[in-house]
Structure formats: structure tokens, C-alpha cells
Length: 218
Image (cartoon, rainbow, N blue to C red; front, side, top):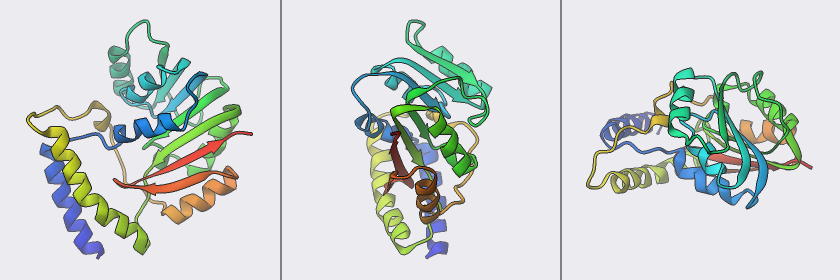
């Protein structure tokens, strides 16, 4: 099964080279559904070109994005209107987070680049009482249910790419240009470590090789 999936994934990579779409942005609206209609401050970790940070600004008094890549941070600043309550910083997500605390912290497709438990602990330390953390992460397929979800995701992925690219040839999404690496933790490992660091955290596997983690600071 693993060999077959590897071949399918290679074929998908070729397909998406000519039919690109942003898998992470697909979950932005889901993130908003986990958040209050209005809040004072938000931090977006691994903010990339700033799409999510600007979306959070529609509800927040102030939003700060942080990303380790200076090129993508410069691009985020270019794309953000001067009057928007959004700022961006180049820095390490563990050591350079601007002083909070924050009512909302988001982290999309970034935490698998970080020491997982350390990152969750640091995010918790920067949340206000009653604050919300939302993580969209990647996991390494391991169980039968993982592979089943992956199998369902494949035709859905192709259909979504076809729909989003129908009748046009859009440029590769900016947020997809940063260097990436595969996830190394299984979903079971993620659940175990997350619930140790964040008691009561809610985690679910999602389509398109992602999971969601939602936690509320008490």
C-alpha cells in the first residue's frame, strides 16, 4: 500500500505543478469558525504571505504575523494595506514571538518544522485567559484509518484543483513557495503529546493531509 501511495503522490505532484492551489488557505474559513466574532489581538505563527493574518484582521483590533523567511515577510508587507491593523516580523516561532498575550494564536502548516511539545507550551504561555489556539498541521500516515482518509483525499484533491483552475492558469500561490519538509509525527503521536501539553485539546484528522487542533486557555 505504501509503494502504491508513493506512486500516486508522485503523480499528484506532477498534476499540481500545472494545477496549483493552496491547501492551507482551504482551512482559513474553518479557523474563523473556531474564533469569536471580535477579539483584541491575534498572532499568526508561520504567517507566510499574510493571507490568514489579513483575514484575522477583519475581526481583531491588532494582528501580528511572524515567519522565519525574510523574503516571504517582505512579500506579506507588500500585500497588506498600510491602514490594516497587521504587522509582520521576521523571527523564530519559539524565541522571537512579540510580547503578548494574545486572544488568538493560529499556526498553519508550520508546527511540524518545530519541536512539537515545546511549540505548544510556548503558544500556551502567550495566550490570554480564555484565549484560543488553532493549529492546522501535517501528520505522517501510519494507521489504516490514515491511509483510508488519504485515499478519499486523492480524488477530492484532484477535483478541487480542477475547480480552482478551471478556465485559467493562476500563478503558484505565494504561501506555497517557502521550503517545506514532510511531517515525521504520526497522528497518534500528535494527539498524545498535544493532550499532555494542552489538556482538553480537540484534535481531528482532516482531508488533504491535515489535522486540526483547537484549544481554549482557561
